[in-house]
Image (cartoon, rainbow, N blue to C red; front, side):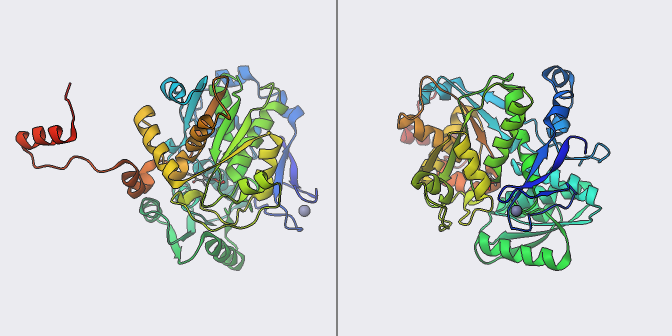
Length: 413
Ligand SMILES: *Cc1c(COP(=O)(O)O)cnc(C)c1O
Ligand SMILES: [Zn+2]
């Protein structure tokens, strides 16, 4: 890879050749992929991108750690829509607001970006089997992207994972182990199994290439905004890989001169599980928390990528915001009704955070904000119905319809 220099430990600084099955440093630290920006600068310009018609995450190949000869995975990942939302901006009192709907990826979450990268690297490594543990979306995205590429998967999920995600796993033909325990227990079992059988490892924060896939969400946002940098980008945070990837993408663009400043990040967590935001707010090291929220994708009591995430939030002079389950449900309804965007609970937690920060007067009239919806609501219909209620249920009869309208005070126009 001419564009990549090496993998570098974020803890001790030791460097490693960027082989396809790279994992963590011998000191236990997580690796970061380091690029040759001088080389990339000469190849990836705004003009080059404007002429490129590939509408997937791979349109930024110069900034991605794959060999030029690598066959890319087949599913269409990335280039999700970025909608400007003037009515919601008005309601919240923001200058401008955009929603990036990453629930429109092939398996319906942002995790497809990391899983497509994992499949590309597994192919380079000559692996036939990939494994991971996940709160649900990393799992379903890996199962789908691997199935399309003809690779086998072993997937570990906590038994609380919503049915929609488990249905995806079974449909994609994964061998699924539903662990009766927390995400932490699930992760530890997957680690032991991967060590034992030598599968290609797609575990969050262990495989350093995953956040390189995730960073493409930032590259797209900036290109879709015609390189005009917003004041804030809001995203939900569990393990911390997504926000770290987002920041990496922004820093890459800054390093090659495609953007001239950096936005501030908004790190949104659930009140019932916010170990990373708590660390920022108290200025103390992070401590494990209970996984006490309905936003299952970010119910991560022991975040796997704490160091990179905390660094990203701090370096961006970011804001933290913790929202209750009620606020998450309200945001689900608000985004649905105002924008036609259907997010899962963790998917709308960033938007719930933006709303809360607007109401608190922390951000407002002068600010431009992008809120990333990280996963689709169809993955977890039980919580969507809990948030938005049941329909009018009557027999097929006009009289009963009129009665029902009268009862509910619905004046038909
Ligand atoms: C995984 C996930 C997140 C959080 O990403 P982390 O890397 O765990 O911080 C947010 N939303 C959804 C829908 C996810 O699946
Ligand atoms: Zn190290």
